[in-house]
Amino acid sequence: MANIVAIVGRPNVGKSTLFNRLIESRKAIMDDVSGVTRDRHYGYAEWTGKFFTVIDTGGYVVGSEDIFEGAIREQVEIAIEEASVVLFMVDLNTGLTDLDKDFASVMRRSKKPVLVVANKADTHEKAMAMHEFYALGLGEIYPVSSQNGSGTGDLLDEVVKHFPDEGIENPEEGIPRFAVLGRPNVGKSSFVNMLLGKDRTIVTDIAGTTRDSIHTHYNAFGKEFILIDTAGIRRKAKVTDNIEFYSVMRSIQALEEADVCIIMLDATRGIESQDVNIVALAAKNKKGMVLMVNKWDLIEKDTQTAKKFTEAIVDKLKPLDYLPIIFTSVTEKQRIFKAIEKAVEVHENRRRKIPTSALNDAMLKEIDNYPPPAIKGKFVKIKYVTQLPIYTPTFAFFCNLPQYIQPAYERYLENKLREHFSFEGVPITVVFRKK
Ligand code: GDP
Ligand code: GDP
Image 1: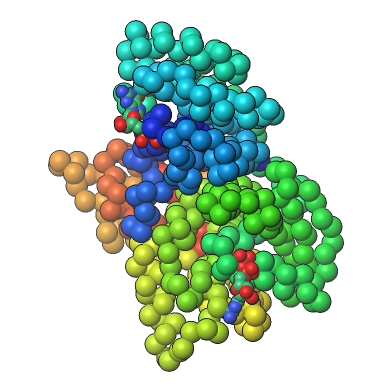
Image 2 (image 1 turned 90 degrees about the horizontal axis):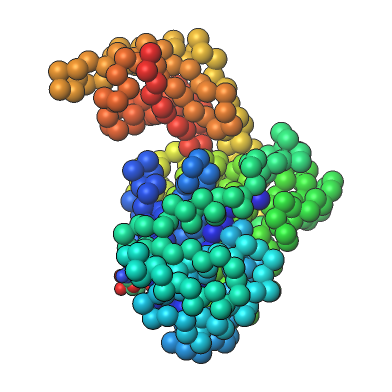
């Protein structure tokens, strides 16, 4: 089950301020991808070791000041259905408004936890004004100041209580789970339908861990895998503004449930900021990735075309330069097998365990050739390296002064690990431990 926290509420209550605060706290340890847009509306957050995705719904539908209908109502309904926890934000400076009451009338029907967040509680006196919001009939009120951060810790303590303790359980351990992601119209349904074609055998349809997400067990091209379907996006959202919002919600759920994300790009449009955001989210979730540049049949090609495309993509995704890129045409059935084969290979890379001896043979030599530079007269000595027994490739380097390792050196080690061992398409994590 994906942990998604949606922030809803009328315009100007401070949703995006809280959103930025929640994802900012992670910034220091996030490898920022150059092409990620500043105005993105979903991000990855962490509180007391629990990870979740936050969505600022205000980014998708800009509501009129006081009319609660159409787009906004639908958006709230989608948020309630798709999120794990809904933060309903109100504003202590303006007090209770009719629009707040309209939101609340929909929230009260929610089976999901809804936490009322009274924002702009910058001082203790201001926080006292929260009492009038008990009239909304939604229980406890959480006073916060998104601006100075007060109250947000208590709020997050409550939020994480609603997440399941365990990660995603995989009913068919070992069989790779793929999510097909991409912008509307890129060819996702065509791709999935084509896999449903005559060379496949569906073994079972398993209801997903998330409502409505269908896990289909395939045996196609001699490969066994489970496809997490995000279809039905258009069916659910009637208002056009909400289609993207809904599709993002579903994509994040599928992404979190998957081992490998097959991220489809449209060759006629190149790589777009939304594509970069999905790649960045997959990377932060340590998922395997394959980029599938679809509609390749529509491109006029010469010998340089694929190379130029690849360069443009790599440039946008810097520093994530390890993703396989496959040029496909779903309608012409070109390289579809290749894409599936690649995804299976990436899954194997993600499961790979390197024996400690092989790891030390390769890496200690590289470290000898280029030792960590001295910092303030201190020399860092790396003694050995081992892969940690956790789900995604993570390598611990044991050394005397782990705190003196610089990011540039971390990247050097990551690059060398990639040179010696096959981790194409897989985010790897490097940590330093004192020894
Ligand atoms: P949104 O439309 O709900 O996303 O609201 P914004 O995050 O854009 O905030 C609207 C306004 O409220 C901005 O001027 C913010 O600076 C201000 N604001 C947000 N949080 C706080 C807060 O905790 N205290 C105060 N005093 N102002 C805030
Ligand atoms: P989705 O919104 O991502 O599920 O996209 P669809 O599968 O509905 O495809 C959108 C449109 O693109 C449809 O008209 C497809 O026939 C077309 N399409 C999909 N793949 C290709 C392709 O490889 N080449 C061309 N020329 N058209 C494609």
